[in-house]
Structure formats: structure tokens, C-alpha cells
Length: 69
Image 1 (spheres, one colour):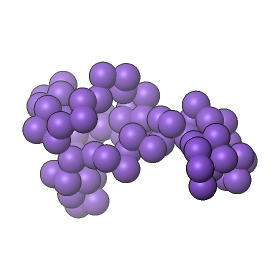
Image 2 (tube, helix red, strand yellow; image 1 turned 180 degrees about the vertical axis):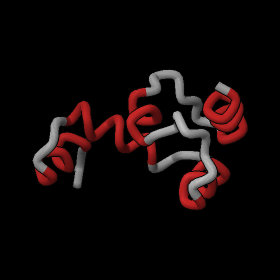
Image 3 (cartoon, helix red, strand yellow; image 1 turned 180 degrees about the horizontal axis):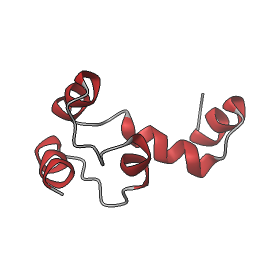
């Protein structure tokens, strides 16, 4: 695929939705492990993560923002 728009079209979803989901591919390993083990805070859902506009790129900052909030 050459663009997020192409991926979105192939998956039959909107490009905006696809961009939000793509950010989840870059979550800090610690956050992913907590979710996989079911030990994340109860209010930490995929929807919350996908909608979070201020999700930092650096994993340590993600942990601080996501797990302390």
C-alpha cells in the first residue's frame, strides 16, 4: 500500500479512523504487555487510546501519560 487512504479503502473504513488505529501499532511494549495480560487500568481501552490526541511518540512518555492518567 502506498498510503493510509489506500489501506482504509481496502479495509472499507475511513482514512481518519485508519490513522487513529495506526497509532496503536506504535504503543510502548509495556502498555501492550499490560493489555495482553489484562492488567491495564480499567479505563484504558482501545477506544481511549485511539482517540487520545496527545499520545507521545516516545515510549517512556507514553507510559507516563497513559498509565498515570
